[in-house]
Length: 183
Ligand SMILES: [Zn+2]
Ligand SMILES: [Zn+2]
Image (cartoon, rainbow, N blue to C red; front, side):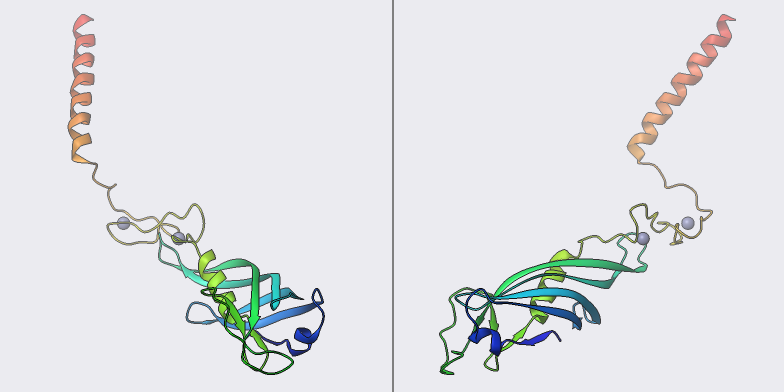
C-alpha cells in the first residue's frame, strides 16, 4: 500500500516539494502488482499535488489466443489531494465539492493506492494482444496457432462468395474451352 505521511509537508509553505520513492504492491486487478517509480509532492494552497510516473506490470489474457502474458503499464499520475482536517487546529474541514477528488485522511496519510488503481484500469487495453501479430486459436480445433499449425481445412468461405467463385470458375472454363476450340 502506497501510503505517505504528509503531516510535515502540510505545515510547510506553499510550493515546498518532497520527492517520494514508490516501491509498493498495489492490488490492481485482483492480484498484488509491484508499482515502482517516483512521485513529487508539492504543497499547494489547498493540499498536496502529486505528480510522477509509475511503472507496473500486470497479467492480462490475450483476446485472440487466450494465453496469459505480462503487460507493462506506465502511469502518469497527476492528482491533488485535499486534507480532511486542519493541520494546525485538527478541526474537520468541509470536503471539497469535487466528486471523486482524492483526500488526505485524518492521520495525514496520503494514500496513492486508489489513484494507482484507477490510472492503471484506464491504461489497460480493451482487447489486449500477447503480441501484435498473434495468430489466435483455430476456430475448429482450438489449437493455439502461435505454437502449432493444425490440419483443419481452411475456414468455409462465405456462401455469397462461393456462388461468385463458381461463376468465375465456369467463366474461366468456358474461356479455356473457347481457346481450345479456336485452336
Ligand atoms: Zn495471443
Ligand atoms: Zn484446427
